[in-house]
Length: 403
Image 1 (cartoon, one colour):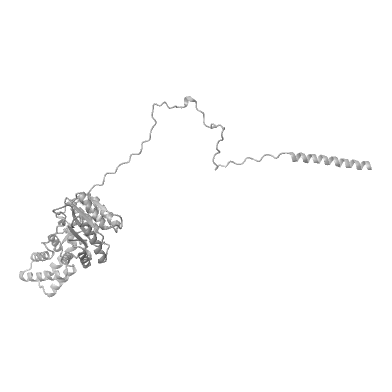
Image 2 (cartoon, helix red, strand yellow):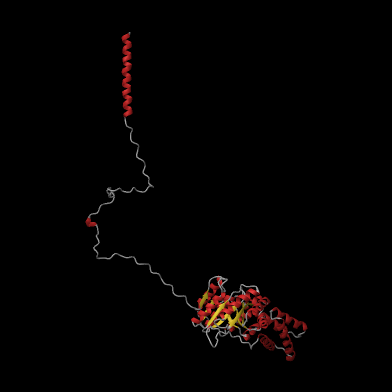
């Protein structure tokens, strides 16, 4: 029995020893290496280290020395030439149409707007009996056309007296009668020449005044065309420095006819620009200097200070030859209020009536001349560059009464 127990114990010890050996061998066994990481396609290629050999791409066939073209120095390397920049031709300078007879050519445009006045008067004068009511209607027709109260009274009195003396009234006689009386009011003996050629010096100096919105800057540009068409050289002074658009607009007008434009900084001193314009005009030996002034001022005091300063500074060079007041014919009696203010500030020598083709109130020509005691010298009859015409009383009256 003891022998059996001893044998069992020995067997257990032997099995335990064998188990320890197996476990020990398993612990000493190395683990397999981890699988290689997937390549990062976004990472930049690794920089070669010193001593590394550059590999030849396996998929690119290697060339022999016979296949390689070596430079022999005979052909110069091609140099890329710069692109050819095409030069733009200089802007063409326009040649304005002559001013002689310009109003005659524009008479049809004038008559379209003014013909109602003449036709209305002729119709009333053709009545068989010209009683007081008819003459009152004639007065109303003239007042509606902005002829003015005093000129209307003069015209009616003159017509009544001549009709009474005439006796018979054929259409031709009435037209001739009305034409003569209107010409008296418009005035045929006034000097309507724009003074630009002083006898003792050059250049002639013209200052253009008027409130904004009357077409003042545009009129200055068109006047430059009139002067160039008559063979003069012109320098423009953009003294309306409070509106950048005014200086740009004036310069564009000047470039069209080859006139030099003098301008200053925005909101700069207008008198300084006017002074420089006259100075450059003298240096360039030009014929005429046109100065476009600011029209933004509404108070009489500010207007007086501004225009007075410009005038004083310009006259350090030479006296002004013309001060032209630009009025919008469509404003009617309101334009007369503006005219009075400007006339008190500077000595107006002439009037420019713009937009006369856009109103049926052509009588404003008579009223404004009577109000200021100065002649209408130029009239604007449209938007075209050559629609500014010297005022000719005969052509104007003919447009009023029609053919």
